[in-house]
Each structure stands twice: as structure tokens, then as C-alpha cells.
Image (tube, rainbow, N blue to C red; front, side, top):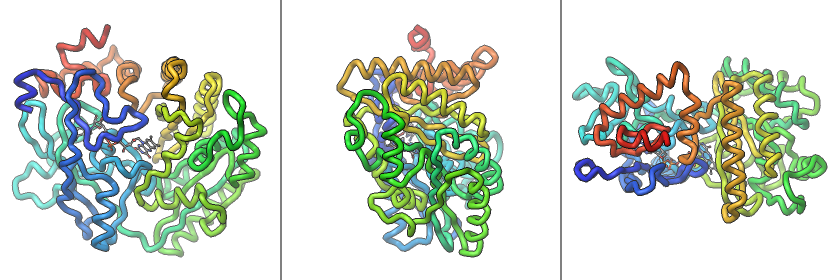
Amino acid sequence: MKVANEFRVPLWVVSRGKNFAYGGAAPVLSGSVVLDLSRMNRILEVNEKFGYALVEPGVSYFDLYRYIEERGLKLWLDVPDPGWGSVVGNALDHGVGYTPYGDHFMMQCGMEVVLPTGEVVRTGMGALPGNNTWQLFKYGFGPYVDGIFSQSNFGIVTKMGIWLMPEPAGYRPYLITFPREEDIEQVVEIARPLRLNNVIQNAATIRSLVLDAAVFAAKSQYYHGDGPIPDSVARRIMEDLEIGMWNFCGALYGPPPIMDALWTAIRDSFSSIPGAKFYFLEDRKRRPDILAHRAETMRGIPKLTEFGFLNWNGGGGHVGFSPVSPTTGEDAIKQYRMVSRRVREYGFDYMGLMAIGFRELHHVTVVVYNQNDPEEHRKIDELFALLVREAAAEGYGEYRTHIHYMDMIARTYSWNDNALMKMHEKIKDALDPNGILSPGKSGIWPKHLRERSDA
Ligand SMILES: Cc1cc2nc3c(=O)[nH]c(=O)nc-3n(C[C@H](O)[C@H](O)[C@H](O)COP(=O)(O)OP(=O)(O)OC[C@H]3O[C@@H](n4cnc5c(N)ncnc54)[C@H](O)[C@@H]3O)c2cc1C
């Protein structure tokens, strides 16, 4: 940091640098030096009694899982789909997983941070010398500052606490399939009170037909025409893979009588949707199978299986469009129609999922395209800008984005003459006077580059 400050060299920090769908390890500003923390990979503590780990940024989900398994600790991780990502980088970018601990930043507790000028601070209880609760109580005393080090360029997190789930007494993953596009409206309307009351215990997902099909199959197995698959092909895929137009993947955790009671409530609620089908793992015989795959993820086993969907077209390029919406049926179907119509208009298949938070949906759409075709790049760029504009006009904002679109998304959060961005810039200037750390992250530019980014 000292050298970078002295020579005014811009740094771009990554933990494991696997932020695929949002830019990988690449910096926003060309010419930045990538500060790769992947070799700071010590697991400093795993505490079984209280259920937490204290890790350095280079620790991947695979590393932490292996550590826990080798020692036979009764703790479960919460993992995003790519097991090779870092516990720290994923949480800092507001990443999500699929157990009851699915909101990773909510589960972080206590940080050590190197500020852009080189001072080292500890947040929360960590600021009290000799404390014994750094990973147990998030807030400490005074302003809660951990949030300003997430999706930002205000500091480098070099240690972070993350809460881990005690191994439950029982586990039962389930899949509910729904046959029609428009079912998403009723599914979300039914899911909201169940989630708010913890009857749906985990960060469950409602996944679209092509997304689920693409994890294990290539488009060419079903369709050779141009553009998105027609309805007749969609129906064939549904029959062939025993999945629906929408697939609700959830899981029950806890002692068997509790799981039985929760399942009765879930089943009774979703039975009101005509054609809904209910499955446990033992009801799914074919392999590979989407529930068998998701069952491992919802139990915190890190993998890379989900990357299969990049083979759908064979082109390997992909970008995530991830607006947030309220958990109402009305918003879900509106979101789905807005996004899927545009995606298909541009010749792509709609591959999306709605991840159910407590009060909101992350509607993540992945557009898979041919990365070697400049025309597809052009189309993606045009499509993405259109999606962002149309979403913002209806009050939907992205929770996270690709490095290429950070300014674009930041500009949509403009309430009161961009008051929030102005505050970010004040913090940036105070903490990073030479403007060396991750210029352009989340649309936040140091003073000397602001003019340039506006241009
Ligand atoms: C097929 C597929 C499935 C995916 N599924 C999921 C999913 O289920 N859930 C999910 O959340 N994501 C998902 N992603 C997105 C992404 O790949 C993962 O979130 C991945 O874990 C991010 O990479 P990383 O953990 O190595 O983070 P990094 O690349 O290390 O970090 C991400 C960003 O955080 C900041 N940062 C990193 N480390 C620090 C630090 N120490 N201090 C300050 N700032 C820092 C940087 O700006 C960096 O660019 C998916 C992507 C693909 C392609």
C-alpha cells in the first residue's frame, strides 16, 4: 500500500478473483495492478461451540469445507454455486447461498481492514483490546462501519468472521415443479408468508426451465434452430427431465417431527397450484438430476456443477443481470415478463432464477452467449443497457453487477440529486486521498478520475 501510494499506482483487490458473471478478477480501470490475496489463505479459527470461522481472504469454500470435514466438526457451510470462490470476497460482494444462512454479508461478524493509506483497523468488538466477542457480536460500540467495506473501494479486508450453521438433526431437500410460465405469480405469493414465518427455512430458489435443463444438457440435444427454444421444445424438455417451467428448490432442516410439520404446511400451500408436483430425493431416479445436485448445495457442499449451464450454447460467455424486487406475485410475473421478453427478442434463451430472501427476490438472469462472436458482444451490451433502464423505470435496481456496468448501475441509484454517490465520494476522498484503491468499483471514482468517468 505504501509503494502504491508513493507511485500513485491504482490497485484492484481480489480475494480469490473468481467473480465470474460479474467480471472475474479483472479491474474496472485498465492499467490497475491486481492485488491478488489468494495466498493469504489461513483459516485462523473454527469455533464449533459458537458456530463461526475467522478466515483470511484467500480461503475458498473448498478449503473451509475440507478443514471442517477433516476434523469432523458438526458445522455446515453456506456456499454459493462456485465452490472455488472465497468466503471473504463473496460476502463482500453481497453474495448468496442456499441454506438458512444464505445472506452471506448478514452472517459476517468482525473484520480486520487495511485502509488505503496503510493503517489497520478492526471493526466491532475487535476494536477492544483483549476482547472475547469479536466473532459473536457484530456491532461493538459506535457507528457500524462493516458495510462500507462491502462492494466498495474503501479498504482491504484481511480477516473476516463468518457464522456457520450447527449441523441440524435432520435434512430433507425437496423440489416442487410448476408447469406454466404464469405460475410464478402464485408461487411467489404463496412463498412470501411461508418465508417470513420461517416455514420455508432456507434461501430457496425458483429456477426456470432452461436454467435447470442447461446444468446437465446442451441445447443441441433438443433444438437446432436459431434463437430461443419454442414452446413445443420446452414441453419436451419438461417431460424428458421431469422438471417444470418453474422449479422450486427448498430444504427442511431440524428434528424429523419439525420437518414433518413444516412440510405439511408447505405442501398444503403449494397444492393449490394446478399441476404442481412434489418430490423428495428418493422420488427422483434419473441421474444427473437437478434435485440431487441442488440437495448438495442446500446442505453447504461446495461444487462447480452449476457451471454446466455455460455449455448450453457452447459459447462460454455469460453475464448476470440481477435486479431486486419485492416478494409479491405481481412483481415476480412483471419482472419475469419484462426480462424474458427482451432476452428472447435478442435471440437468447431465458435462464433465470428467483432467490427468495426474507422480503425480497433476487431475480438473477444469466445470459449465455458466444464470447468469440463480436456481434453477440454488441447485442449483449445493448440488451443489458435496455434491461437496466427498463428495470429502473419500474423501481427495480441491481444488487450487484459486472465491472463493465458499474457506472451504469450506480447512476440508477440517484435519489435526491445523487446524494448517496456524493456521500460515497466524500468517504472515498477522506480514506483514500491518493485514489489508489480499486478505482471505479461500484461506480465510485477517486477525485482525479471523476471527470474521466463522467465523460
Ligand atoms: C455459474 C455461476 C454460478 C454462480 N453462482 C453464484 C451464487 O450462487 N452465489 C453468488 O453469490 N455468486 C454466484 N456467482 C458469482 C460469482 O462467481 C461468485 O460470487 C464468486 O464466489 C465470486 O468470486 P470470489 O469469491 O473469488 O470473489 P472475488 O473475485 O475475490 O471478490 C469479489 C469482489 O469483491 C471485492 N473484494 C474481494 N476481496 C476483497 C477484499 N479482501 N477486500 C475488499 N474488497 C474485496 C472486489 O471488488 C472483488 O472484485 C456465480 C457465477 C457463475 C458463473
